[in-house]
Length: 344
Image (cartoon, rainbow, N blue to C red; front, side, top):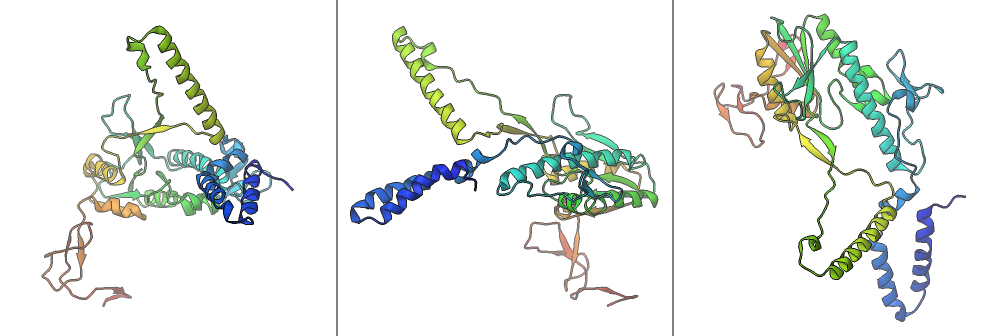
């Protein structure tokens, strides 16, 4: 039987609480004090002390996984599918491990888009300076020159990036289920130009710069002895604070800040940007969109029009309760559905 550090810390508190609850009215004040103490304990932070280091591999090989010929992620030694609960009772650590693997999968899919699908990676904004944050999309060679048809793919919200539909499906099912690759390959086989959007790549994360606070005593006219005493107290306070922080959060992660990508700071902005700078510049007579989940809402930002059931004449503006694309009358009060060979 193993006992964790957090259990050892909490055990005396629980014992004391039990003893007090068995006591008389005189112990009420102590009970209140202990309850207050327990309410101040951050169990999530406390449990971090039992975690292994959050230090994960940066390659599939490092995780000892690989995609087989069927596009399934399998352990290279056992052949088993991915196991989320790699360490029991350490959900946070397991989640961080899963996220680290997910980042590797994202890069792997990017490589497949370029190598297997022969797409080009295009940096945006198109006029970005060397130092500013950038995103990118993927395009086929004929995306802007194909005179007949262009297909545009937009994924949903969350952690997925260009070329993915669902990370969970990539990891737990296979590449065909979770990526856009089957759509891309079939579209190209049937003569479509292809553009793959990347609507969730809205910012880059950088480590927050350390702020050095200048001591107020440096610019004062206080006596040297008083300034030294203040500096000594300040250093002692900082030392105690650092010690407490190290104890409270031994796996403290780096503090980061987000630098948003110009004109691509949201999925909607990204969709409009790609529309304005690429899709409208294409030679295609017909443009087809394949959008999943929130990708559909991003698509709506492109001045779409929704024809709805209404008794009003065709194309009459119809008021909407939702802040989506403009709605106009379809010229019919009953919804038309396609059944077999006839409209009903």
